[in-house]
Image 1 (tube, helix red, strand yellow):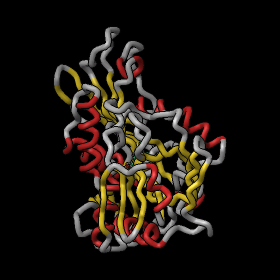
Image 2: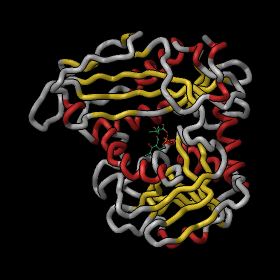
Image 3: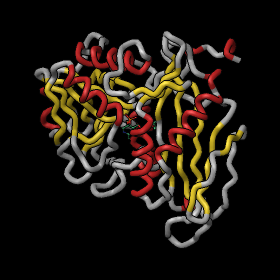
Image 4: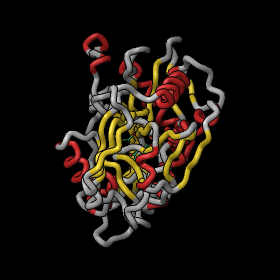
Length: 340
Ligand code: PLP
Ligand code: COI
């Protein structure tokens, strides 16, 4: 099997692997982890995940190091965020230790799908939590399923670590001002499909969303957080309608370690013209530098890369992050878990 996968040509897509790991919440408690080789799930037609969007998910990655060892990046953070999403839409919280156990199991059982060191690909890990209980009134379910599957992936954006254009369109929001934007729930992604498609049809990799209340501040960028560099400062939006990105949290630490000032605060649209570099960051996007932001309503563009190359600070941050993830450099904060 390994020989038939062209690891360096992988895109960000689904590929069948050998096993997934499942766990069910019934009668007020979580059961044992179960290993399955089936790609399908059997769901009651009246389950809350199908009707009322009781669904949350996570995304994290495993990497093969030069030393051959397997490393998973910050899975405790993903476990905690899934708990936060569960609270946000009234689902049963999945315990952190059980989450970690399920992830390690899924990775180990599918070891032959972990891309080799240096291929630029990684093993994407997708945990999800769904309401299974059959209801017809709008209420939280009393039964849930947690599932984790894995699939080898290449870069999320075709450009990889090369600057790509994004656009702003004030007619679209992905989340409401006091809605579910801070949770990783399926509904936010459904809400982003129309704008995302429109952007892609026009040659952009993503939409840079503005704050849904006033449209005065930057929110986030498609399935990734936004950051910018100016005057040796790492600037990233604070907002109560964006997902708290674990990649962004890691980059703020690495930026501070490199001697940059870090500002997490509301970022007015009016600052766009002052940035030296701009980028989006996330597990799938890693760091994707932004070449240009086109404000399609105001008919103006902000340019961050003219030569098709990432800016120097984005490049330094990218190299550092990837080096920690793959084990090329020390992991001073204990972000990486080695799977034996
Ligand atoms: N924002 C959104 C909407 C996302 O879907 C993601 C992806 O998980 C991110 C930001 C980045 O978060 P993380 O760095 O934890 O993957
Ligand atoms: C991730 O970065 O892990 C994501 O979940 C982004 C996306 C594929 C939804």
